[in-house]
Length: 240
Image 1 (cartoon, rainbow, N blue to C red):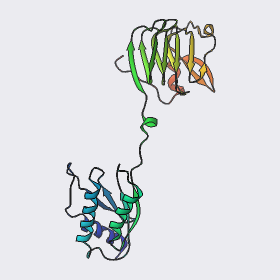
Image 2: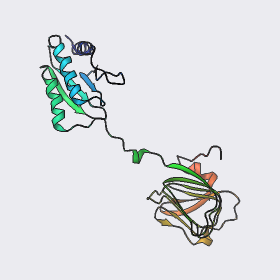
Image 3: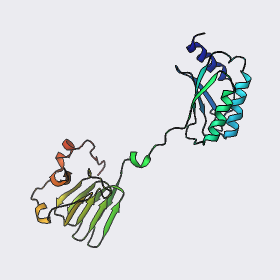
Image 4: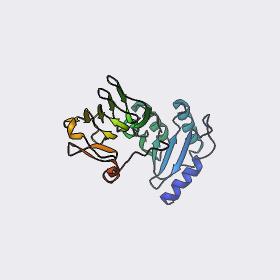
């Protein structure tokens, strides 16, 4: 019998009725692939019940499943198991003499801290002298930052008003962060670990919104309308 036909037959035989979870999903789902069979074990089902169900399936169809070697991959979903429990699964499947377990694997964990996009927070008001506003993510301030006032963010800083105090964007080391303001006359600008030039050099007569950014480790100033041409991801504000 050809390998592909044999695998599909084994898949059909093993997909008989079996235990289901509280959500109605089968505790064990078996799929055929070009390489062999994939056993999908529900990660919400008790392991002991899974092993019982697995053994019952294999025992019930033992005679029908005899034949040439079939490769088996076991997928555990989000469940994490030690070597001992993985070996229990391998042993249960190996009892079906022609099933060769190639792998017993959990899904790869997703690093949410690195993949998650920074959160945008919108604030209204004035940051006065002696006040410090901190945020983990991007900040949109509808108001002014007075001399002596400070804003610190891990992401970008957007000020719909005058920036006359201190702004520190990308404070966790993000050199791609920017600082934008309708009126850019800061006491100090800082992006990641780079601190701005003397305040008088930032004074601008331009009536348009400007932003500070890093280029090759040096802080520069440009019109905010030019941001999209130099940055792949641009923050869009809806309903502001």
